[in-house]
Image (cartoon, rainbow, N blue to C red; front, side, top):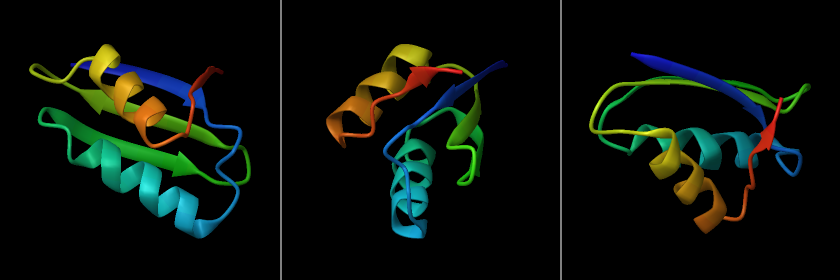
Length: 69
């Protein structure tokens, strides 16, 4: 299992949080998504077939660009 934490600077409301969490959770292999709105920090745990590349691609696609924490 892999884990990565990153910031999503334009995640500013509860709708944003729901969108980010919902889209990431739909990726096959994602085990857990933790979102902290005040700090804009997201932590994702996944296993194969998910990958950081797939997660990052999905975030870019929905216009919530991840930034290294």
